[in-house]
Image (cartoon, rainbow, N blue to C red; front, side):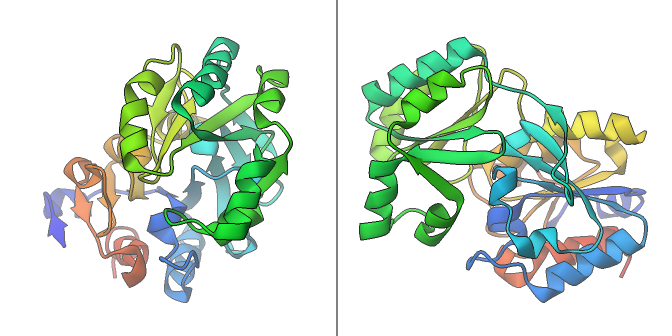
Length: 286
Protein backbone atom coordinates (compact mmCIF):
# COMPACT_ATOMS: atom_id res chain seq x y z
CA UNK A 1 0.00 0.00 0.00
CA UNK A 2 1.10 3.55 -0.71
CA UNK A 3 0.16 6.73 1.05
CA UNK A 4 0.44 10.36 -0.03
CA UNK A 5 0.35 13.22 2.49
CA UNK A 6 -0.98 10.99 5.29
CA UNK A 7 -1.23 13.74 7.89
CA UNK A 8 -3.24 15.96 5.55
CA UNK A 9 -5.53 13.12 4.49
CA UNK A 10 -6.26 12.09 8.05
CA UNK A 11 -7.25 15.69 8.83
CA UNK A 12 -10.06 15.67 6.24
CA UNK A 13 -13.57 15.84 7.64
CA UNK A 14 -15.21 13.26 5.38
CA UNK A 15 -19.00 13.52 5.14
CA UNK A 16 -19.64 11.53 1.95
CA UNK A 17 -18.18 8.29 0.61
CA UNK A 18 -18.67 7.36 -3.06
CA UNK A 19 -17.82 3.84 -4.16
CA UNK A 20 -17.39 2.13 -7.48
CA UNK A 21 -18.75 -1.43 -7.34
CA UNK A 22 -17.18 -3.90 -9.80
CA UNK A 23 -13.50 -4.40 -9.10
CA UNK A 24 -13.69 -2.07 -6.09
CA UNK A 25 -16.41 -2.76 -3.52
CA UNK A 26 -17.25 -6.18 -5.00
CA UNK A 27 -14.62 -8.90 -4.90
CA UNK A 28 -13.46 -10.85 -7.93
CA UNK A 29 -16.45 -13.18 -7.59
CA UNK A 30 -18.78 -10.19 -7.87
CA UNK A 31 -19.86 -10.40 -4.22
CA UNK A 32 -20.03 -7.87 -1.39
CA UNK A 33 -18.03 -9.17 1.55
CA UNK A 34 -19.37 -9.02 5.09
CA UNK A 35 -16.38 -6.86 6.04
CA UNK A 36 -17.14 -4.23 3.39
CA UNK A 37 -20.89 -4.30 4.17
CA UNK A 38 -20.17 -3.77 7.87
CA UNK A 39 -17.89 -0.81 7.16
CA UNK A 40 -20.53 0.82 4.95
CA UNK A 41 -23.24 0.39 7.58
CA UNK A 42 -21.01 1.71 10.35
CA UNK A 43 -20.17 4.78 8.26
CA UNK A 44 -23.86 5.37 7.52
CA UNK A 45 -24.67 5.01 11.23
CA UNK A 46 -22.05 7.68 11.89
CA UNK A 47 -23.95 10.10 9.63
CA UNK A 48 -21.85 9.70 6.49
CA UNK A 49 -23.65 9.91 3.15
CA UNK A 50 -22.95 6.65 1.31
CA UNK A 51 -23.17 6.76 -2.49
CA UNK A 52 -22.74 3.98 -5.02
CA UNK A 53 -21.04 5.31 -8.17
CA UNK A 54 -21.22 2.65 -10.84
CA UNK A 55 -21.17 2.06 -14.56
CA UNK A 56 -24.09 -0.30 -13.99
CA UNK A 57 -27.65 0.69 -14.73
CA UNK A 58 -29.95 0.94 -11.73
CA UNK A 59 -31.68 -2.32 -12.67
CA UNK A 60 -28.28 -4.04 -12.71
CA UNK A 61 -27.55 -3.24 -9.07
CA UNK A 62 -27.80 -6.51 -7.12
CA UNK A 63 -30.00 -6.94 -4.08
CA UNK A 64 -26.93 -7.45 -1.90
CA UNK A 65 -25.93 -3.81 -2.37
CA UNK A 66 -29.49 -2.46 -2.25
CA UNK A 67 -29.99 -4.22 1.07
CA UNK A 68 -27.02 -2.55 2.79
CA UNK A 69 -28.46 -0.30 5.47
CA UNK A 70 -27.81 3.39 4.98
CA UNK A 71 -26.81 3.64 1.31
CA UNK A 72 -28.70 6.74 0.21
CA UNK A 73 -27.89 7.31 -3.45
CA UNK A 74 -26.79 5.41 -6.54
CA UNK A 75 -24.98 7.12 -9.39
CA UNK A 76 -25.65 4.82 -12.31
CA UNK A 77 -24.74 4.39 -15.99
CA UNK A 78 -21.41 6.14 -15.35
CA UNK A 79 -23.08 9.33 -14.14
CA UNK A 80 -26.11 9.53 -16.40
CA UNK A 81 -28.44 9.29 -13.40
CA UNK A 82 -28.52 9.87 -9.69
CA UNK A 83 -31.10 7.60 -8.09
CA UNK A 84 -32.40 7.31 -4.57
CA UNK A 85 -31.12 3.87 -3.71
CA UNK A 86 -34.16 2.38 -2.03
CA UNK A 87 -36.87 3.71 -4.35
CA UNK A 88 -34.97 4.04 -7.63
CA UNK A 89 -36.30 7.58 -8.07
CA UNK A 90 -34.18 9.51 -10.59
CA UNK A 91 -33.24 12.92 -9.23
CA UNK A 92 -30.61 13.86 -11.84
CA UNK A 93 -30.17 12.84 -15.49
CA UNK A 94 -27.76 13.53 -18.36
CA UNK A 95 -28.24 11.87 -21.77
CA UNK A 96 -26.30 11.43 -25.01
CA UNK A 97 -26.88 13.89 -27.81
CA UNK A 98 -29.01 12.25 -30.56
CA UNK A 99 -26.30 13.10 -33.11
CA UNK A 100 -23.80 11.13 -31.06
CA UNK A 101 -26.27 8.23 -30.92
CA UNK A 102 -26.45 8.16 -34.71
CA UNK A 103 -22.65 8.12 -34.89
CA UNK A 104 -22.60 5.21 -32.42
CA UNK A 105 -24.90 3.27 -34.76
CA UNK A 106 -22.55 3.93 -37.69
CA UNK A 107 -19.42 2.96 -35.78
CA UNK A 108 -20.96 -0.24 -34.51
CA UNK A 109 -20.96 -1.48 -38.08
CA UNK A 110 -17.64 0.11 -39.10
CA UNK A 111 -15.67 -1.31 -36.16
CA UNK A 112 -17.46 -4.65 -35.79
CA UNK A 113 -18.41 -4.06 -32.16
CA UNK A 114 -21.13 -5.47 -30.02
CA UNK A 115 -22.97 -2.70 -28.19
CA UNK A 116 -24.89 -2.45 -24.94
CA UNK A 117 -27.45 0.32 -24.78
CA UNK A 118 -28.68 1.80 -21.48
CA UNK A 119 -32.25 3.16 -21.51
CA UNK A 120 -34.38 4.02 -18.47
CA UNK A 121 -32.14 2.20 -16.06
CA UNK A 122 -31.82 -1.02 -18.07
CA UNK A 123 -29.17 -2.41 -20.40
CA UNK A 124 -30.07 -3.96 -23.76
CA UNK A 125 -28.02 -6.11 -26.16
CA UNK A 126 -28.55 -7.87 -29.46
CA UNK A 127 -30.06 -11.32 -29.11
CA UNK A 128 -27.12 -12.75 -31.09
CA UNK A 129 -24.62 -11.42 -28.53
CA UNK A 130 -26.69 -12.69 -25.62
CA UNK A 131 -26.96 -16.16 -27.19
CA UNK A 132 -23.23 -16.21 -27.91
CA UNK A 133 -22.39 -15.52 -24.27
CA UNK A 134 -25.00 -18.02 -23.10
CA UNK A 135 -23.69 -20.80 -25.33
CA UNK A 136 -19.94 -20.21 -25.22
CA UNK A 137 -19.32 -18.06 -22.15
CA UNK A 138 -17.01 -15.05 -22.26
CA UNK A 139 -13.24 -14.89 -21.84
CA UNK A 140 -13.06 -11.19 -20.95
CA UNK A 141 -15.96 -10.60 -18.54
CA UNK A 142 -18.36 -12.36 -16.19
CA UNK A 143 -20.80 -14.24 -18.41
CA UNK A 144 -23.22 -14.86 -15.54
CA UNK A 145 -23.45 -11.11 -14.92
CA UNK A 146 -24.13 -10.43 -18.61
CA UNK A 147 -26.94 -12.98 -18.77
CA UNK A 148 -28.51 -11.70 -15.56
CA UNK A 149 -28.27 -7.97 -16.23
CA UNK A 150 -28.71 -7.57 -20.01
CA UNK A 151 -32.03 -7.73 -21.85
CA UNK A 152 -31.75 -9.27 -25.35
CA UNK A 153 -33.66 -7.66 -28.23
CA UNK A 154 -33.73 -8.56 -31.95
CA UNK A 155 -32.02 -5.33 -33.04
CA UNK A 156 -30.41 -3.21 -30.34
CA UNK A 157 -29.33 -0.57 -32.89
CA UNK A 158 -32.93 -0.01 -33.96
CA UNK A 159 -33.98 0.25 -30.32
CA UNK A 160 -31.24 2.79 -29.67
CA UNK A 161 -32.20 4.96 -32.65
CA UNK A 162 -35.88 4.79 -31.67
CA UNK A 163 -34.97 6.20 -28.24
CA UNK A 164 -32.14 8.46 -29.40
CA UNK A 165 -33.01 11.26 -26.95
CA UNK A 166 -33.16 8.91 -23.95
CA UNK A 167 -29.82 7.08 -24.15
CA UNK A 168 -27.88 7.06 -20.88
CA UNK A 169 -24.79 5.18 -21.98
CA UNK A 170 -23.53 2.91 -24.75
CA UNK A 171 -20.80 0.30 -24.37
CA UNK A 172 -18.74 -0.72 -27.39
CA UNK A 173 -17.45 -4.24 -26.67
CA UNK A 174 -14.59 -5.89 -28.56
CA UNK A 175 -13.57 -9.52 -28.32
CA UNK A 176 -9.86 -8.64 -28.57
CA UNK A 177 -7.81 -5.71 -27.33
CA UNK A 178 -6.32 -5.28 -30.81
CA UNK A 179 -9.80 -4.62 -32.23
CA UNK A 180 -10.49 -2.17 -29.42
CA UNK A 181 -7.29 -0.23 -30.04
CA UNK A 182 -8.05 -0.06 -33.77
CA UNK A 183 -11.48 1.36 -32.94
CA UNK A 184 -10.40 3.73 -30.17
CA UNK A 185 -9.56 6.75 -32.41
CA UNK A 186 -12.92 6.50 -34.20
CA UNK A 187 -14.96 6.12 -31.02
CA UNK A 188 -12.99 8.85 -29.27
CA UNK A 189 -13.90 11.24 -32.10
CA UNK A 190 -17.67 10.95 -31.54
CA UNK A 191 -18.88 14.55 -31.20
CA UNK A 192 -20.42 15.89 -27.99
CA UNK A 193 -19.65 12.74 -26.01
CA UNK A 194 -17.43 11.51 -23.20
CA UNK A 195 -15.45 8.31 -23.72
CA UNK A 196 -14.15 6.10 -20.92
CA UNK A 197 -13.72 2.46 -19.97
CA UNK A 198 -14.68 0.24 -17.03
CA UNK A 199 -13.03 -2.98 -18.15
CA UNK A 200 -10.26 -3.60 -20.69
CA UNK A 201 -12.44 -4.79 -23.58
CA UNK A 202 -14.91 -1.90 -23.67
CA UNK A 203 -15.23 1.75 -24.62
CA UNK A 204 -18.13 3.58 -23.00
CA UNK A 205 -19.89 6.54 -24.58
CA UNK A 206 -21.79 9.03 -22.45
CA UNK A 207 -23.25 12.48 -22.86
CA UNK A 208 -21.07 15.56 -23.33
CA UNK A 209 -20.89 16.17 -19.58
CA UNK A 210 -21.66 12.68 -18.27
CA UNK A 211 -19.30 11.30 -15.66
CA UNK A 212 -19.32 10.08 -12.11
CA UNK A 213 -17.56 13.36 -11.27
CA UNK A 214 -20.35 15.50 -12.75
CA UNK A 215 -23.05 13.55 -10.93
CA UNK A 216 -21.14 13.77 -7.65
CA UNK A 217 -20.56 17.50 -8.11
CA UNK A 218 -24.32 17.97 -8.50
CA UNK A 219 -25.08 15.77 -5.48
CA UNK A 220 -22.53 17.52 -3.28
CA UNK A 221 -24.14 20.88 -4.11
CA UNK A 222 -27.61 19.49 -3.37
CA UNK A 223 -26.44 18.35 0.08
CA UNK A 224 -24.44 21.51 0.80
CA UNK A 225 -21.10 19.69 0.88
CA UNK A 226 -17.67 20.47 -0.54
CA UNK A 227 -15.38 18.15 -2.54
CA UNK A 228 -12.88 18.19 0.35
CA UNK A 229 -15.56 16.39 2.39
CA UNK A 230 -15.76 13.55 -0.15
CA UNK A 231 -13.85 10.28 -0.26
CA UNK A 232 -14.05 8.19 -3.46
CA UNK A 233 -12.85 4.63 -4.10
CA UNK A 234 -12.35 3.14 -7.57
CA UNK A 235 -10.38 0.79 -9.79
CA UNK A 236 -10.74 1.82 -13.45
CA UNK A 237 -10.34 4.74 -15.89
CA UNK A 238 -14.01 5.71 -15.51
CA UNK A 239 -13.23 6.47 -11.85
CA UNK A 240 -10.31 8.84 -12.47
CA UNK A 241 -12.32 12.08 -12.60
CA UNK A 242 -14.16 11.40 -9.35
CA UNK A 243 -10.91 10.31 -7.68
CA UNK A 244 -9.40 13.66 -8.63
CA UNK A 245 -12.49 15.53 -7.40
CA UNK A 246 -12.45 13.99 -3.94
CA UNK A 247 -10.70 15.28 -0.88
CA UNK A 248 -9.43 11.74 -0.53
CA UNK A 249 -9.17 9.72 -3.74
CA UNK A 250 -8.57 6.03 -3.06
CA UNK A 251 -7.44 3.38 -5.55
CA UNK A 252 -7.85 -0.27 -4.65
CA UNK A 253 -4.71 -2.37 -4.99
CA UNK A 254 -5.97 -4.04 -8.18
CA UNK A 255 -6.69 -0.72 -9.93
CA UNK A 256 -5.61 -0.48 -13.57
CA UNK A 257 -5.52 1.92 -16.50
CA UNK A 258 -3.45 4.57 -14.72
CA UNK A 259 -5.91 5.18 -11.87
CA UNK A 260 -3.25 4.78 -9.19
CA UNK A 261 -1.37 7.75 -10.62
CA UNK A 262 -4.34 9.97 -9.76
CA UNK A 263 -5.08 8.62 -6.27
CA UNK A 264 -4.08 10.06 -2.91
CA UNK A 265 -4.03 6.65 -1.29
CA UNK A 266 -3.71 3.05 -2.47
CA UNK A 267 -5.61 0.62 -0.26
CA UNK A 268 -5.87 -3.18 -0.33
CA UNK A 269 -7.32 -4.97 -3.34
CA UNK A 270 -11.00 -5.70 -3.85
CA UNK A 271 -10.31 -9.26 -2.63
CA UNK A 272 -8.70 -7.93 0.55
CA UNK A 273 -11.59 -5.63 1.61
CA UNK A 274 -9.68 -2.54 0.53
CA UNK A 275 -12.83 -0.40 0.70
CA UNK A 276 -13.37 -1.30 4.35
CA UNK A 277 -9.72 -0.58 5.09
CA UNK A 278 -10.05 2.93 3.64
CA UNK A 279 -13.35 3.65 5.41
CA UNK A 280 -11.98 2.45 8.73
CA UNK A 281 -8.84 4.58 8.35
CA UNK A 282 -10.19 7.85 7.00
CA UNK A 283 -13.85 7.90 8.06
CA UNK A 284 -14.22 5.82 11.22
CA UNK A 285 -10.71 6.57 12.53
CA UNK A 286 -10.08 2.97 13.49
